[in-house]
Image 1 (cartoon, rainbow, N blue to C red):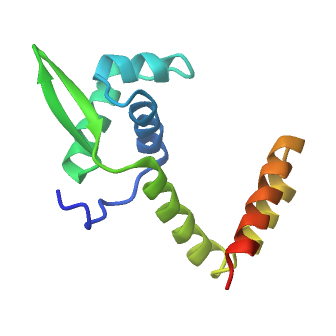
Image 2 (cartoon, rainbow, N blue to C red; image 1 turned 45 degrees about the vertical axis):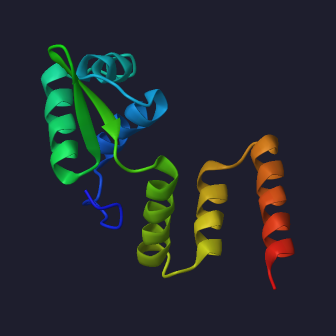
Image 3 (cartoon, one colour; image 1 turned 90 degrees about the vertical axis):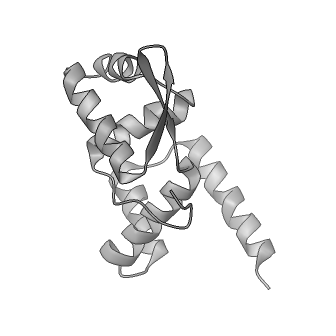
Length: 130
């Protein structure tokens, strides 16, 4: 797949699978199923289907290791998250990043550590502006 092409959007369940693969670097269906089933009830066949679809959409690739397929991400997590957030800001917040931040703070709150990291990111952004 050409890295310039963006695969189709991810559903919440697909993001869940991608997070496991991103965290592990490479993973089999069984490994992803184990990680997900530790959090909630999910059928192994469901995980297999999701991973197959993710490969068809260009999100995952695989290599064979004996009888098992070992899946790996074809897109970096950071690039994917930037794209998802940009789309969210554009569509749900009419292009207003500050509205997104306010919704996060008011809806979920932030810890002292998160607030400190946010302040540092803002300071870096202000220093970088022309």
